[in-house]
Image 1: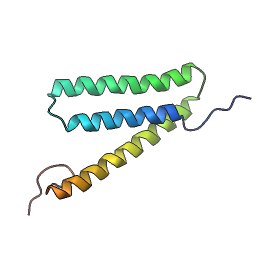
Image 2: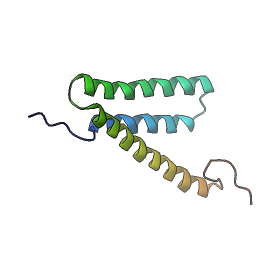
Image 3: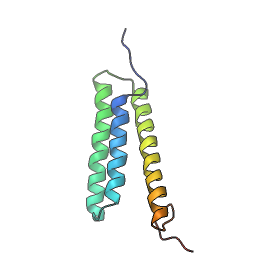
Length: 101
């Protein structure tokens, strides 16, 4: 029979790419319009990967959703860790604002 896999590795990788690309772009000097355009582009690409997995009958929708959730959670945790580690060294709190002593 057909062996669908949970979660979809392609959707997981796409979600990691989307979250990391958006996180790194917020650390650049892009204007709001450029940041929004870049975020929209990578989000559409990430969603397209999941849609393609379903359209190709390679995964169930739940497999893709699980992959997106896993990838976003892992990349979000990595971004949080980066902010916590580097922000503390520069005297910033977890939101990136200057810490009040």
